[in-house]
Amino acid sequence: MRPVTHLDAYRPTDDLSAVPGPPLPVLTDGWHARVVDPDTRDLDLVHRWMQAPHVVAFWHQAWPRGQWEEELRRQLSGLHSLPVLVSRGEDPVIYLEVYRAARDVVAQVYPARPHDLGLHVAVGELSMTDQGLVRKLLPVVTAALFDADPRCTRVLLEPDVRNRRAIASFTAGGFAPVGEVLLPDKVALLMVRTR
Image (tube, rainbow, N blue to C red):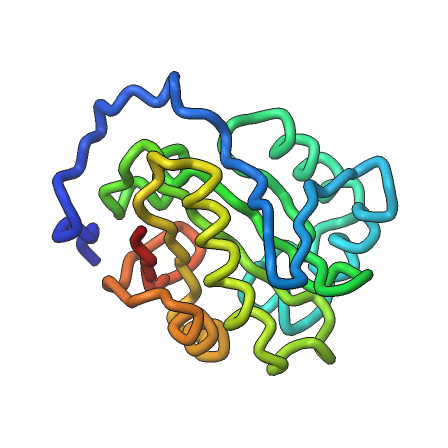
């Protein structure tokens, strides 16, 4: 499978040293986002959600609690990815990872601009799936990310091509398919929303 190159020219020499880590989106319309705190019950929540069969099927990260603690701390200490819990009302309903695409493995198959942002999205509770949460959240999240980083012109998602539920939600949330890409753990459909 060939890299997606029709978006613009690939620039492997871009200097990322001045590019900050991914921002925390400040959400509106009844949504709230906060950074995951592994020193609280957040760790147990993320760990439990990642054990759910509907999440495991596409995330492949049904790791022990200790490994999730290490992963969250690793993300929080770097400039690549930011783990986020999104609430609608009082309780978290969605786990997000906001990441800099140019610092991610996806940059090997996608011509990432230095300020492009990516999202990994999981609805942890099976009972909360098929409620339109992701479809409603994505326009709010992308608007907040564009506000948080004025130099960001694209937000991307890369769901597994077999994950029809996610692809339908992402399309309804304003993301357009660009093409299939081969990542280390999946064949993904690259989907992009532009500013």
